[in-house]
Every structure is written in C-alpha cells, then in structure tokens.
Length: 71
Image 1 (spheres, rainbow, N blue to C red):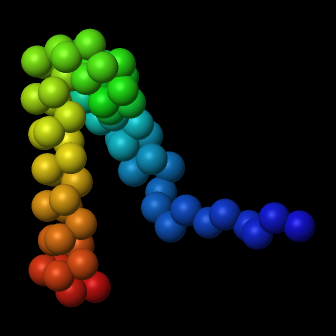
Image 2 (tube, rainbow, N blue to C red):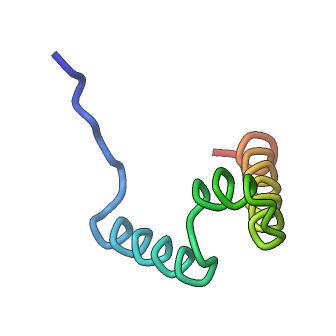
Image 3 (tube, rainbow, N blue to C red):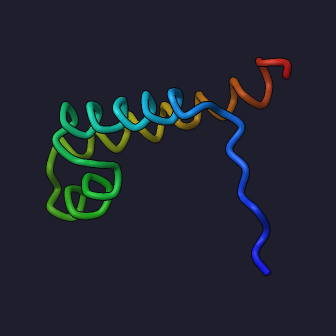
C-alpha cells in the first residue's frame, strides 16, 4: 500500500504556485527541461543562459533553506 501524501499548504497557495509557474514558463519561453535538454543540445544561447540561471537559483535556494533559514 502506498503512503498517504500530505501537502501542508492551502489550496490558495497551491493555485498561486501553479499560476506563478505558468507565468514563468510563458516569460521564459519554455520550461527547465526544454531549455536544459533540447535548447542546450542545439547550443541555443537563450537556453544556456536560462539553464545557468535556474541552476544558480536552485543552488542559492538550497543554501538559504539549509543554512540560513531557521525552521
């Protein structure tokens, strides 16, 4: 039997998160997988920059969550 999945946020937060992701995909002209796999394979400058930006942002986010924010 699969464990129950619990999401500790309200529906409003989930909807807002979904909208923000949709806006980001629209402004970024694609998603992380599209830029990281197809765009970089095509040596697209836009995709290389986008991939570097989300990888850098992810690294900073992990550092802040693990070392700066005290839960």
